[in-house]
Structures are given as C-alpha cells and as structure tokens.
Length: 404
Image (tube, rainbow, N blue to C red; front, side):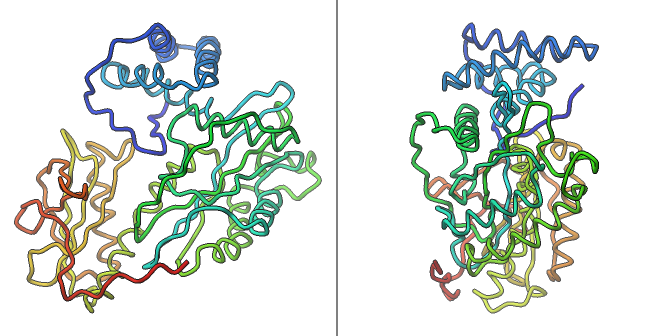
C-alpha cells in the first residue's frame, strides 16, 4: 500500500528478541495495522489522524521507547504495518502543525571527499546568513519564514531519535516565527568519524501558513510574485549560489550538493549519493599512499549480510597481492536488499571500471557481517574468500595532516 522507507541512520532490525509491549506500544501496533489494512482514502485518513495524534503525544513527551518497541515488533511480524508506522513517525518528527502555520524540517546535504579531515561544527555567522539567503531565494516559497541551525552536521551528529528530531523542528519553527525557543535538552555533539568521503548536513525549518506552499516549485505563476520554477531549476540555482560558501567552509574538499528537501528524504538520498564518492576517494588515497596507478589496483567485491545481501564491501589490493590495503562499504537501502542486490553489484562494477581499476574480482557467496573485535572496523574478503582486516603496508605514506 505504501513504499518501504528507510530512516536516515539505517535501522538494524534483523529478527530482534521481541520485548513485551507496553500499552502505548500496543496502541501504536494496532493503529498501524489498521492503516496498513485500510482499503480507501477516507479510511486512511481516519487511521492516519488517530496514529498521528498518538505519535505526536509520545514524541512531545520525549520518549521513543514505545515507538522503538512497536517498530521492532512490526518489522519482525507485519512488514506492511512497519512501513506505515515508520512513515508517519518520520512525518511527525520532521513536521509540526502550529495551528495557523505548518513547519517542516529540511536538510541540505553536502557530499564531500578529501584526504584531510572533513569539517563539521559551527557555521560562521556570515556563512549562515548567506546560505539562509540562498534558501530563501531558490528553495523556499515566497511567503515562508525560515530559521537555520547554526551547524554543519555530520551523520554522527544528527538527532538520534524521532523525539529529538521533533524537538529540533519545534525550536527552529519558534525561532522562525520570532518566538523564544522552548527549553531543550542540550545535546553534546559527538566526534565525527574520520572518513575519506562523507556527507555534511545543513538543517533549517520552513514555516508557512497552513495549506500554503513551502517550496518554490509548489508555487503557481499567478500566485507568486517571483518567477515560478520547477525542482530541477531550483536545484541548479541553489547549487550555483551555495557551492562557493560551502567550499569556504570545507577547505581542501571536493564537494557537491543535493537539493534541499524534507529531512528524512534528504538523508536517504544522501546515503545513496555518497557511495560513489567513497570508492573514488579510496582509490585516490591508495594511489597517493602507495604510489600506484588505478590500473595497478585490484578490487574484490563481495556481498555481506545475515540472510540476504545488506551491503557490499569492496577490498582494494595491490597487483598480484592478496592483502587488502584499504576497503569501502557500499550499504544497500530499501528495495536494493535481497533480489535487487544484483543491480547494486553492477553499479559498483561499472564505477570501478570507469575509474580504470585494473582487475575486478566478484565473489558470489554471502559473507557474514563481521567486524574487527579490537577496533570495530569491517572485515573484507580477500581474493580467496578469507575475511581479513584492511591494513596499509608499512611503507605507505602517512595520512595527510588535518587541514582546518
């Protein structure tokens, strides 16, 4: 009935031991089942209103336990109801009904790769003002108000729970309307994992009158004083205007942007879009560290998962050498898992050949999701199918220093 959704940070819900459901969790399960089984738009509306009100109540209380338990239960027992519950949970985390106004949390993803540490943290005031002006000019509808979060977030620093996302949405919406933000729990932003390719997120909230357009591409020519445009035009203008400011924040990085959109959709799209950057950045890194040309690199591509492919791991090795010197993880999302995984393998193979990798070895067996017990790094398959740790040889050039 509804599309399968994946939250920004991929949820590990593989046959969990199901907890005893609380009354709140049982109610969520029952309402999600009702919505999943609905056969009409009017019945959909009934269940959505009931389930939405319950989700809003729980998220405003700041507790996600009942929701998490309900999702775990439905994932293991009723996938269709799981889909509708997580869809509405995302909607009520990223959007708020303020009576006369509606508010939506948006994310503007920035794809970055570098041999240096990729910056995350506070935005300079001038950069925040410039980016806000470009969002107003190319993304937001004419009569919207907006507030921007003064940070450039990494994935590790985004809200971890639906209630935290809703709290951020509420606070930014109040700021956009000129009201003092409600008291929020100050969240310590964790350190960012050092990756050669990663996404940074600019977060903002759009506020419009209820029923009015939020985005430029929703506006009709006669209803908007500014020139109407479609999504592609809005994206190209945002890209042209925002890149110079973002480049000044991400010194030493190769960057690109995606179109700003609703928070959860943007996070999913950036998860997919960053994957090719990871492969290109890894190849550039080992070419520099080992003084190799891409044609001298061999890539070993293998599916990893529990019962079906959940990700591909690409181990990179020197010619005629079984040792994996570096590796890249290519996660699968939504319908890419299971029978659709072959398409992802073809995409990886095509990309490696476009990068002029000398030898591509495809392993067909499904490997377990194993990680190093000491450091937690993923294990990669070598050409013979043994799982090994990716390690640079001693003669490799040391990684570049932090640029910022």
